[in-house]
Length: 174
Image (cartoon, rainbow, N blue to C red):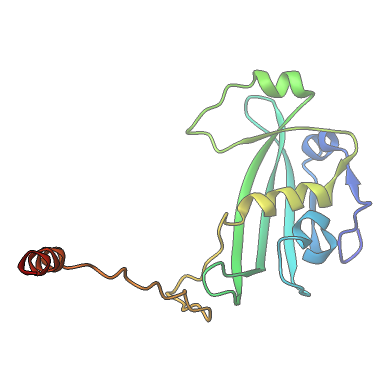
């Protein structure tokens, strides 16, 4: 595999698991189209390692390790920020959607189920995991100030309830 992953790099998921292959490398964040829409223009990259495996129960899978500093815009102050991703994700390969749907969900098991393929696109797989790791609303870890001032709202003038009474009394005297 070349130094940087390309969108045309595929792997047979079942061979990866059976042979316990290890695939490692880098991918430019801007080479991933869905991620590119979410990030600041950058030359940042993600370092990845995918290790094929067969679980004790016999199912094929892999462990994906990702490390990246993803450039995002802080939703509070509007300034660039780096969001660090360091993750290890365990995958179980299902033969088809029906098998994937039949695997029980176990809250204590962190295994992700994906439909394996003889032609699994590595870049799309990695991109999906990065997108799932991003915060819904990116903000700095520290208290940042917005450069945009909130519009000042004028407090409504409170009328003195006795002012009308005074006006009414003034009318009576006349």
